[in-house]
Image 1 (cartoon, one colour):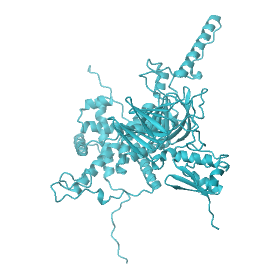
Image 2 (cartoon, each protein chain N blue to C red; image 1 turned 30 degrees about the horizontal axis):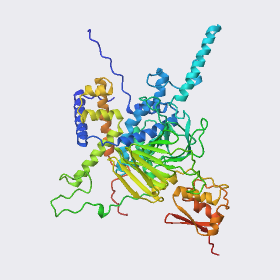
Image 3 (cartoon, rainbow over the protein chains, first blue to last red; image 1 turned 60 degrees about the vertical axis):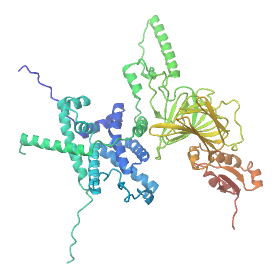
Image 4 (cartoon, chains in turn green, orange; image 1 turned 30 degrees about the vertical axis):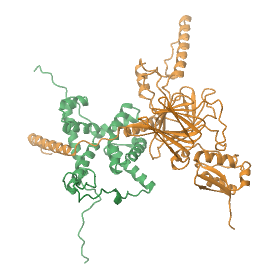
Length: 227
Length: 411
C-alpha cells in the first residue's frame, strides 16, 4: 500500500450534452460560451457554404452571417438530437436555397473564353479544367474520388464537437504527444486518451454516414413483365 | 445477456480503428483555412444579435461588476438600484458623513457618466440617425489610451451618435446588409442635433468614427457627404451655412475636405486591408491632402491616391450605378404639402440627374403645384414615376437628365 490512488476522471458527458450545455450557457448570456460557439462552428459553416457557392467568399460570408443570426432565435429549441453543426448546416442550406430562389439564380455558364487555351501543340501540358484535380498525372476520375474523400473527412471533422476535431488534428496531423494535447485541452492525459477514443469513434461514425448514399436513392428494380 | 468481449480483441480493434482514422486524416490533410476577416465580420454581427437577443452585458462590464474596478478600465456605470443600501444611522455625525459620501458618489458617478465610453449612447450627441437599413453597430471610443474600446452594440433606428463613437455597417448582399444616413451637427443642447448640418451616409461594409461634428475618420468602406442645403431645396441652389466648418474625412491615405459639395470617399483594397483612397465629386470641390501635398477634385472628377503616393485623375458620371448605394441610403422624403420643385430637387440631389422641364410653362408652375400624400419606401429614382402621374405629369430619363412634361393622354 502507501501508494496514492489517482482520482478517476469523472465520466465525460456525451457530445450532444456538451453541445446542449454550450447552447444553454450562450443563450443565458455567457460570453465565454458565445466565443466558444463562434470559434467552434463558424469556420466549418463558412467552409460548408463556400463549397456550395463555388468559392464565392462574399456571398458565403453573408449567408453564414444571416444563418447564424437567424439560428440564434431558434437555438432555444435545440435538443441535441442531431449534432449542432449538422443542424447549423441544415439552416445554412435553407438560407442558400432561399437566396437562389429570391435571385432566380441560374448556374454560371462556362463560356469557351473561360477555358484554358489549347496548348496540345506546344511544350506546355494542358492544365486541368478543374483546379486541384488531375494536375500531377493522376487520372481525373481518381483525382475526383480523392477530392471527394478528402471533403468527406473534413466534413466529418466539422461535424464533431470542436474540441474533438482539434484533438484529432493535433494527434494525427500535427503528431503532438498526448501530454501536449492534454495541456492544450487543460485536462489530464488519461482523460485526453479517452477523449481521443470517443473522438475517433464519433469521427468514424460521421465518416461512414457521409459515405453512405442518401436514403432517397434506391437501387433499380427489375421491371416485372405484365402477367 | 451479451457475451463480454475479449480485451485483447477489443484492443486490436481499437488499434485498427486508430490506424484507419490516422490514414484518412493524413490523406485528406488539414481542413481548408477560411478568411479571418470574414470570420470576424460574422462574429461581430452574431455578437450584436446575441446582445439584442439575450440582453447580455459585455465582457468588460461583467468583469467589472464581478471583480471590482481594474486599473486601466473605467469604473462600471452602476444603476442606483445596484448600489448597496446605506445602513440607517441615528447618530448625527455618521449621518453627515454618509450624506457627504452620497454626494461624492453621485458627483463621481456624474463625472463618469460624462466621460465614460462604456455606454454606447453616452456623451454629447454630434449626429442623429436619419435612416438605417440592415445591421449597423455602434461603439464608444476607449476613454483612455490603451484601454479597450467599448463593445459593439446594435444602433437603434432613432439613435443619437455621441462624440467619438465608431460605426460599422454589415457588408454583403443579404438582408442584414447595413447602411446608414446621418445628419451631422453641433449639439445646441444635450441629446439634440442641429437640423441643418451636413448629411453623411455610410455604405455597406464600412467603418467610421465620428471624431466631431465636422471630422470623420474613415477606417473601411465608403462614405458620402452632402454639405448642401436641407432636403427639399432645388439641387445646387446653395443655401450652405456660412458658419459651418468644412467637413473633413480622415483616412490612412490622406484627408478629404469639402468646399461646399457632395462627394464620396472610398477606401479601396482587398482582404489585406485598404491600399488606396478614391474620392469622387458629384458637385462642388474637394481638397485632398496627403503628406503635405494637396490636390483638388472638381465636379465629375475622380481622384485615386495609391499607397505608393501616385495619383490618378479621371472624369466620371455624377449619376448611374456607381452612385446607386447613395440614393438607396437616402432618408425618406415627406411629400405632403411640398411643391413639385422641392420634390424634383430632392430627386436630382439624390440621383445626380439634371432636371429639365419639357414645357416652359411647367417650369414656372413647378413652385405652385403642391403635392399631397405619402411615397412610402420609394427610392428617389422611383419617385417621379410614382408621384408625377397623379399631378398629370410624366417623366423620362435621357442620359442623366430627367425630363418632366405634361402627360399626353390618348383618347
